[in-house]
Structures are given as C-alpha cells and as structure tokens.
Amino acid sequence: MLVQKLMDCEEFIAGDGTLLRELLHPDKQPLNLRYSLAHAAVPVGQVSAPHALKTSEVYYILSGRGEMHIEQETQLVKPGDAIYIPPDARQFIRNCGSEPLVFICIVDPAWHQADETVFVSAAVAEPESLS
Image (cartoon, rainbow, N blue to C red; front, side, top):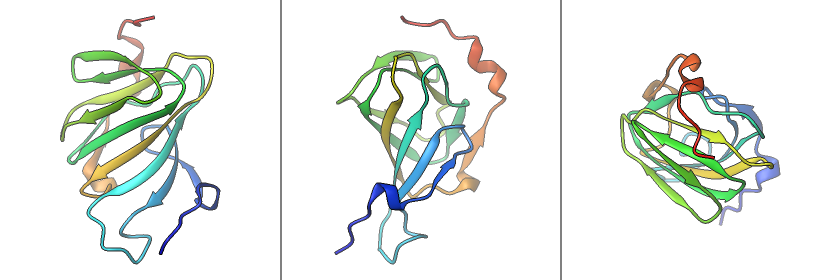
C-alpha cells in the first residue's frame, strides 16, 4: 500500500505558473501507472499561463472559483466540477475568487515536460472576464 501525503510532496512552480505538488507519478514511485496525479493551486488574482499538453488532462476543483479557458470556450468553475481537457487544447485557468483556487490534475498518459507547450503569457490578459 502506498499512501502519499500532500505535505510530504515538494511544492514547485509548474511551467504554467501554478503551484504544484505531484502526488503520484510513475517516474517518482515504483508503481505501474499510466497517469499522473497532482495537486495544484492558483493564488487569488492569478492566472496560469496558456499551455497545451499532448495528453489528455482532467481538473477536479477542490476549493475556490475560477474561469476555465479551453480553446475558444470559457466557463466558470467551482468546487465539485470536473473539467476534461482534450489533448493539444490550448488552456489556462484564472482565479476569479477571493481564496486560492485549488484543484487536482490527472494527466493520462503521465505528465512529462516534453509533452507540454507553454505559450506567451501576455495573451492571458486579453480574454473577457465572466464575473
């Protein structure tokens, strides 16, 4: 049995600017996993950089409120929402609430830096807010 404790996982700033802790990753634990599982946070007033993964991804919102942007679509998200992000989709998430936006990321197959493209962050300021 493996029980991975969040606070035992090193926090780092991901390529898209989110605060990330990798809970499960086949390169970090001796597990036969296809996917990776991470805990992410976007501070109040912040936004992740536009990026795309070659793999599919799911965000599950734990706390806070946000605007999820996938390609040309934008939708408000809140705790209990699961968001499917298809492979190669340009995406970012904006914290539009008054507390940190916290979510789980599942990437399948497992996340690898070579599978991610981070776009110029200046494009983030352009989309209109839904609030």
